[in-house]
Length: 339
Image (cartoon, rainbow, N blue to C red; front, top):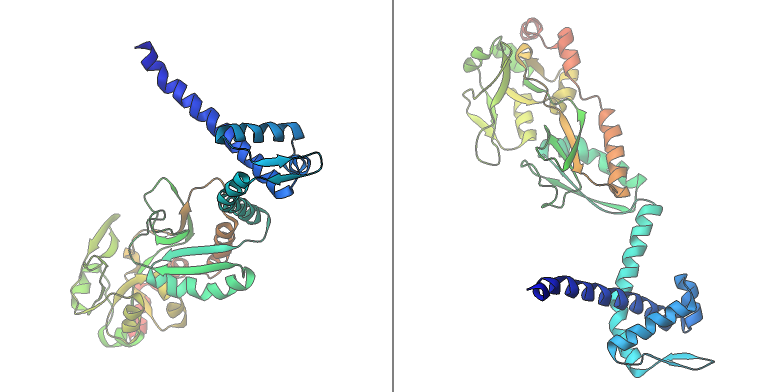
């Protein structure tokens, strides 16, 4: 019984010792074969010549074959040594290449491939216009922008950086808020002049409402805050799109009202191409977040993109709430516009 309980530990120690001897022996063997000399191999590895010799001798003992023919003047591979070197070299070269690439990533300019995930609306409106400038600054970083309404699983989908409405519920993900995420009910001035604008959520039933279909097939609820409480509802409407840009264009064309993200409509609100309504009932800001996996050693390409995107997106001034709260979108103004 005692012998049985000791066997796993003894076996584990044997494997550990064997691997340790084999690893150091292979490293020493490759160095000697490459340098053609035990002395030069020792200098390259930063150890004594005797340590290199002992490691090679242990490896030869494990393999049961002599790997080098040694004289006082030269060191050359035996036939067995040449065969072993050819079998080991591809693996060793891959390890050395991996080490070199990691060193380049740490010490050189940012480079490599970057996969970015976003919703269609935010990707087209905000991210895509930034790509060219990022590539000019970091030409060695390749970019792939993946647009999907469904929240990305950063690990499974191999997404380095994701942009989402609201934070991802994942403790392994770091989420930093970039801009507010307001949902605003908007109409064109032409629609407002013809039909007026709702002063309360209940008045939506008298208006043409344009809806957004989600990837799961459901229509997206319109979110409001009424008497201090969040409320979602789905007003009646005959026009439905599964694309943010098509929804926006329909509103600009005067086909009806739609509730859309603030970043999508800010420019149109400022230019007067759209007017907002029901601002006193706007839901709480959910925030638009930049998300990435928590890592101790964040690759330089990811850090470069995070810093670039954060600075550039925040500089776009996509926060409409302050202007609306100052009276640009209150119901009284909407009546004036409509008249």
